[in-house]
Amino acid sequence: MKIPDIIIAIDGYSSTGKSSLAKKIARKFDFLYLDSGALYRGVTLFAQEEGLISRLNTVNPALKEALGGLELHFGAEGKLYMGPRCIEQQIRSLEVSGQVSPIAAVPYVREWVDEMLHAFGRAGRIVMDGRDIGTAVFPEAQLKIFMTASEQVRAQRRYDEMVAKGETPLLEEVVKNLRERDYIDSHRETAPLRRAEDAFELDNSDMTFEEELAWVQGLIQGKFGIL
Ligand code: CDP
Image 1 (cartoon, protein in one colour):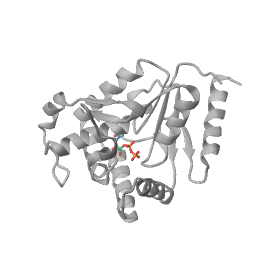
Image 2 (image 1 turned 90 degrees about the horizontal axis):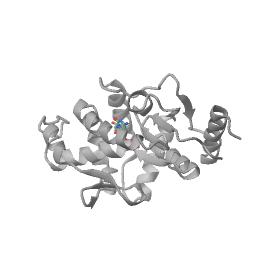
Image 3 (image 1 turned 180 degrees about the vertical axis):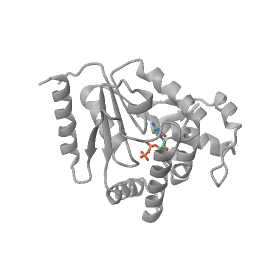
Image 4 (image 1 turned 90 degrees about the vertical axis):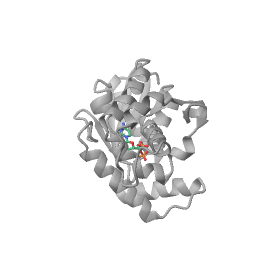
């Protein structure tokens, strides 16, 4: 199945499986996958290392200027790099997860990330996941999906993912983090998380991965009249 050079935007709550679905779509249809959340996580790690965010999540305004010296890029297998250093594992830690939403609520941080996202988007044939891709970054995206799943399913998925990586999180810490991020992400002033009016909603609480992919494939076939 060959689909046109479109932008596919996948938004939704924490740990709904956005990136797994986006990667699968990218592989199947030969699209470029871009994880916008990784960039917010990269900025968060940077702010932590530079001492520009306090324990109570107060962001030092000096971050704005410091961002001029930050270089983030995606390297082999889509892993995130800060200059020469691969930071993929660090950005997925609970420490970064615990401060990423306050950082992502800062307007100049969003501008900094958006600039990178738009540069990628110009190439077309891209699937991007995040919180505001279909509403703010690419409102013109030709296909928008908004993902949800029950809190229990989401927390268990994230917990299993972390355990598989050899970490030892507490399930209640994972749940707390998901709740906090969903709240901050949906209530911030700049580009809050919400479903775009023209987005198709996918609740995958009780779906297998194959069912999910078949759902997306059906959507694409219907929308673009491809057999
Ligand atoms: O953990 P999960 O994969 O669900 O989140 P993520 O996609 O890695 O995003 C981490 C955080 O970055 C979110 O909780 C948001 O605060 C922020 N984010 C955002 O504000 N806008 C985006 N387009 C993507 C992520």
